[in-house]
Image 1 (tube, protein in one colour):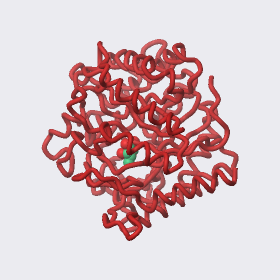
Image 2 (tube, protein in one colour):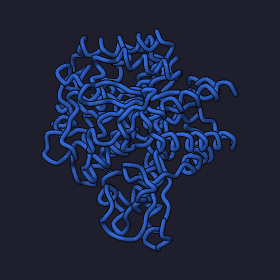
Image 3 (cartoon, helix red, strand yellow):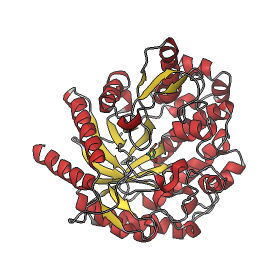
Image 4 (cartoon, helix red, strand yellow):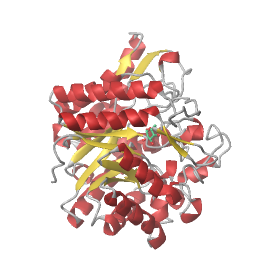
Length: 455
Ligand code: FCB
């Protein structure tokens, strides 16, 4: 086991499919295929160019350096380094990450690498994707290959990013690639994602015992906004598939009973002898992505994405926060960040110190830069400050939080919403690819400097 440094690592995060572009330099992924389905991506955009980061990474690393971060969290595109997801690795694909890592280290920024941020090589979907156990073996082989190429310099690894989304948005509601709507397959994918994580960590740790290994989960707290019986009844069911179905087996407790009965017989049916032990391979740190709490009210259907995502939510919908929410229609609930961090410390200390690996907000920014060349984004600044205060509140309550990564360095391809939703602290003009810092970038820079001065 490897100790992360004491204190907070300050960083910014991105993900491969969302920023890289250079479609010609990699194999096809489930997201390329999904983007080709008419209507799947709201604005009809795709990952072919996005921020063109593959060709502009030097400029992006310079932005990180000016921001003053300690670390940069990015993901490797599996299909760039192993175009079909099995077999030979691409020297050209690995070469890109090799140069990126060197550029970061040259700027004094530590690379934090996520192995899987949803862009499964399409060939692997043809053999069943995450609903198939075969993908588990493929993932372990891929993880070891990437570590072999970068592990002399990369010492912070995360296996999966938000496996709940890969399983349940990908196979439950189908609003994400591969666009499947089948709870049985989503339950199987849940198990295979966890198993691939545990097996990859064990294998990678054998290859490099000096690196720190984690997984990144999107956890939150569900609340009954209207106090109704329907909403209250949904809360534990939501918690079971959103939170504890991941946390409990990682902590060595096996699958929680409420998840097992809710997903009967699909989840338990996927488990083979020895799997649960492998999933519980010890972690060096746990990544938490936090955007907002889930606030439910009685009623069917109306409000986006939650219905059909996971079972147990048939009689509720998420409360529409209206103008009080972000451009995603998400409520702003900074206290919820403190609550999740406290819960992790109280109920799951065995999962190690927590790193907030994503937090941020989308707004319809006014693109015109002011006289000082900065794009004004007051509500993103407000969101940032409120969540940094919530992080501090958790630390004041004794929670061992070891990092915070802003989502995202750049405006980027926001999955099923395409280029229409902007999370960046740096604006990207998707026609010219020009980068312009927003006020939130400067606010974050100041916050980091102030936190260092206090430490
Ligand atoms: C998270 C994803 C990330 C980004 C943000 C807004 O769920 O990990 O890629 O889309 O949401």
